[in-house]
Length: 307
Image 1 (spheres, helix red, strand yellow):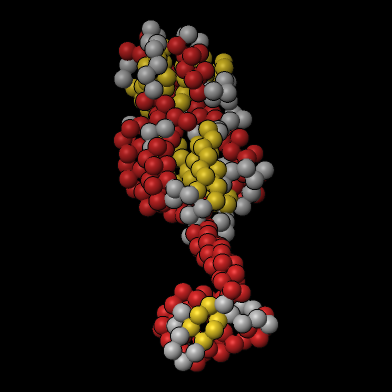
Image 2 (cartoon, rainbow, N blue to C red; image 1 turned 30 degrees about the vertical axis):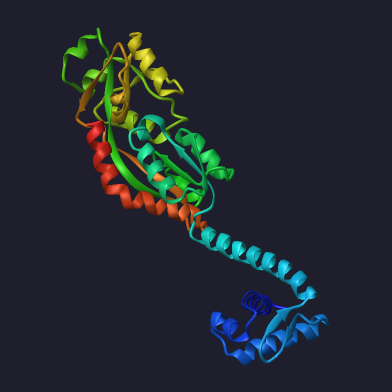
């Protein structure tokens, strides 16, 4: 017995007319009659009383009708659920992000996505790059917004797509003499104790800062390497050194800290969207596509906010 047999029976049971059932199913009337005969032969029961003028459902047919309607409804639900899954409209999605780097634009990304895919269970996890790498490795993360993973992206079969480009700025204690200047040189920073976000968290950014300073003949004096960006600013406000931080951090109003541009530049600081290469999950693909669709606007917005 196949679903098409059940659909034919259900159409006849509703219409109590073979011609009307055939029209509903868009098949020839003899095919409907033959399907009902086949069902009755297979089950060994009579489902309909039929004459030339009327069709009546039997007691056995009524019992069968209730189960058939339930089975067909369940089948339709299963098909719809499968189709929604294929379109990425259901499931679960875990997204990791760096706080200051994504706070201005992440809400609009989430709002846009949830408006189109309300059936997806979306979880947001604030994670620095090192922890995102671990989460990807352990299969606990689907998409990340992070600094580049470098060689580890290749090892984990991850693709990186640029979202926007930031730069390094100096966080200076308000009462420091350098706070009176609009721009600071790398040479000036070389004479100060530095506070950098720890290398384990963002090795690419840390190494970029160190290599840039060494490139102009400066031997960096790194006094503190906190594992939280707010702790970096706390050390700066306390007068323990000059912080070198992403420009997006300068959006934070932090008492006792002034932000200054650095010349020459310490180089671009990209933020990327990371996801598994050739991921077959429609849910991930739908999220990535939505971000791609907004990328130009996000890039302009973030670069404007961080400048």
